[in-house]
Structures are given as structure tokens and as C-alpha cells.
Image (cartoon, rainbow, N blue to C red):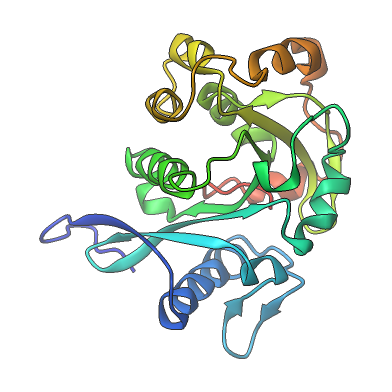
Length: 244
């Protein structure tokens, strides 16, 4: 748990590369999703209080630590990972996205302790993840999904609304979004914290990301709130987390 008045306020981000570090994150997931939010988790181990999923096997997983305790986490996969097949179908990733599976990433399990919600720390975790995950083999486009209250947050980061509401098998109504890595000028216009990462990796529209946005982005009127599971979602609004 986070102390209300921490003595040193030390924040750091590390990739979980060994079993012990990953188990810390799996326990953190259980605390956020099951104990705090009361969400059904297909892969929850209630005896050991862990949430471990098939996607974790091939994923790169990062944790944020505050004074040594896990306070946030995020997971990244490439669509070349076999376990991403469900999301390829859910997000309707087809010929509209002219990239190889290993050039497309899937970001899931973004969550943060409610005590630090609204601070700069979730943004620091997202930026660190975007930079480090793409350092050696950059992806050309990233996909996420989110629920209603996090849609403005992801749109401000530079993600693009292209599909409408879909029904996730665990989280109900979620909104799939995509973020081309080469939308450098658009990210700068949005003053997104991801703009600096994009400038490091890409020239603007170098593989057609901004063209893709113009052809696929939904209008504002299509971004209406979902009609299903609103009461359940209202309860879950106590911590920042995306749907996957």
C-alpha cells in the first residue's frame, strides 16, 4: 500500500523481466481489478490472488514503483504473438491497416493505484513504455481499448477513434482506438506527451499514418456513450485502467 505521507517520494519504472517482478504485477492486478473494482477476471487465481493471462507469456510488462511498492503497470504485445488473435478480431484489424503483424502493437492492462490518479505518474509510465517498447524494433501503429470515462484521455494522447463500441468478453462495452507512430505533427498540435517519442522514431507521415487517420477516424457524433453496462462501469470509475 502507498503511505499518505511518503518519506522519500521515489518513483521509478522498470520492465518486469523475471518471475518475481512479474508476480508482483500479477498481484497488483488482482488488487485493482478484483478487490477494488470487483471485476470478473477469467484468469484470476483467487487462492494466490494473482491475475495471469495467456497474453503475458510473450508480452513485455512494465511496472511503476513508488517508494518500492508497485503502483502502476502496463503490458505490450505485438500482433505477431499468437495470443493476440482475440483482439485482432475484436478490433477488426484487416486490410485497412497495411502493416505486418510484428509492426502493430497491442497495449493492455494499463492501470494505476487510485491514490496517484490525476498525478503526473501515469503519463510518465505511458511515455517510458512507448519509448522503451519501441526502442529496438519500433512498431508503426499501436492499438488500445478503453471504457467511456477514459476515452477523452486517450484521444488527448493522440489515439484515434475508428470503430465504435464493441463488446469485450470481460469488460463489456469498450472503444478500440489506434495510434500511428508517425503522426508527429498531429501529436504536436495536441500537445501530447507522446510527441517527443514520435519525433525520435519517425518522420511525419513516413508510412501513411496521418493519411490513415483521415480515412478511418470517426466523427464526434459517433462517439456517443455506450448503452450497455453503464451502472457496472460507473462503479469501476474509481481507478484508471484500460479495458484489455
